[in-house]
Image (cartoon, rainbow, N blue to C red; front, side, top):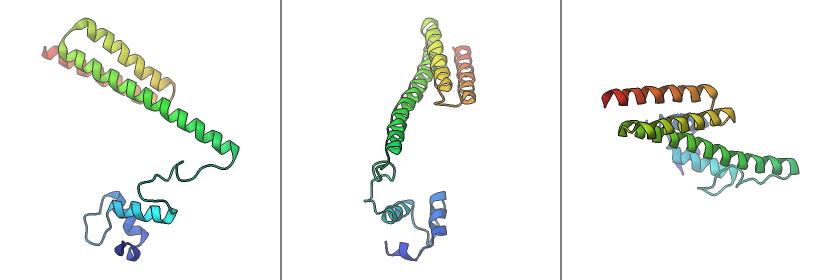
Length: 142
């Protein structure tokens, strides 16, 4: 901590970008400690909603909404990821019935995530395209 008092913010920003191997640069952990000291938060606590509770009713509502949205988006993203993985595994196994249902499920999960804004529509299209290419490659290998 003593070394941190003599480093400028530029040095710390360089450490966050990944150039912390050079001599004289603090590590990313030191940067986090310094940030928490500046915010007067204990180390290990996040600077998001746990550190500063909103005061106004509208900001309290925004916090509730964002937490609900975050949970929903995480679930949709995870469902899409698991469906793509299941389709890839089904392609490797070679069972065509399981593969067709897995492909349909994966495309549906990706489309739903894109429709609701959880992931970008182009990302969903790109993932579907890559999935179909992987499946074609796996089927030609079998």
